[in-house]
Length: 324
Ligand SMILES: NC(=O)c1ccc[n+]([C@@H]2O[C@H](COP(=O)([O-])OP(=O)(O)OC[C@H]3O[C@@H](n4cnc5c(N)ncnc54)[C@H](O)[C@@H]3O)[C@@H](O)[C@H]2O)c1
Image 1: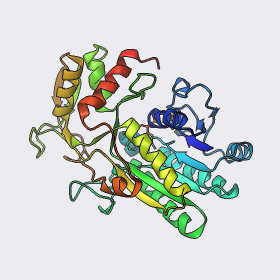
Image 2 (image 1 turned 120 degrees about the horizontal axis):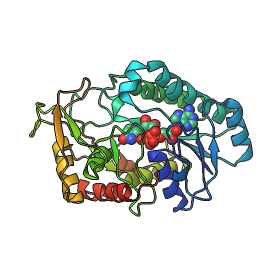
Image 3 (image 1 turned 135 degrees about the horizontal axis):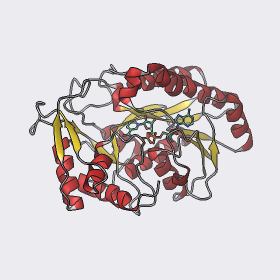
């Protein structure tokens, strides 16, 4: 059985659905601060509580035959992490330690961690592979970087085995539209653009049009949520089969500019999306694109969504059917 922390959130809930449809038995721990109980599929136990609550963790590990933890729970607002760093270090780093300690007490040794390309900081070379230097430029990225360091130390000293997955930009939803992206506040480009297309927002802000990129807007790497889910399952298999602790980038290896993304959103929705150009935001690198060849080679990961049009189709399906 797999304990999925943050399993009521965007990426976690898609992993839970994927697991359920691939013969696994997930159980969700989420405090619902940002998650949605409607996102947890029927039949999957949802424990509403905090991952930093050691007593609750002991109850969960005692009650359920858990052999692995897939750890999505975290706060993920980069801007807020700058104005309220304590919130990020305490939740993302300190509360994660509570989970690792509970695993140690209960002899559970497989851990999959949601890390991020934000642990790299400003890119020195693009595409970025896993050996790119890590110098996070905000407390969110640091809070995840610290966990990676803790995992390395724990795996050397104790029985813990981990896979840290450094995601680039997660995007899209369940192709059937049952669940999808729902952050409040929403800060991600694609859902905001689609909400502009629906008339739910007046316009979208484009932050920076004078970057050293072909159209002057920032370039990012978008990976479909089900391809992320598949990578988590393969990472679990690696550990369960006795593989070594490892770190992998997860990205599509293709860069799309903000304007590219908005043009594709207009194509998919057949609606105009009003753009308002704004100054650059501090801390936005011009270009972030993954090299994910290690995940393909070592995990046998084979992303199925090859282009952004197909990813945005699934996001649009969700926006049209959205129920949370
Ligand atoms: N969305 C992306 O593009 C992206 C990119 C890189 C990394 N990540 C990482 O992936 C993970 C999931 O991101 P997401 O977009 O699904 O975010 P999300 O906010 O939708 O999901 C996170 C979930 O964790 C829960 N949570 C937070 N703190 C908790 C706690 N102390 N106890 C129990 N539950 C708690 C929230 O209620 C929420 O349901 C995060 O760790 C994030 O840092 C996301």
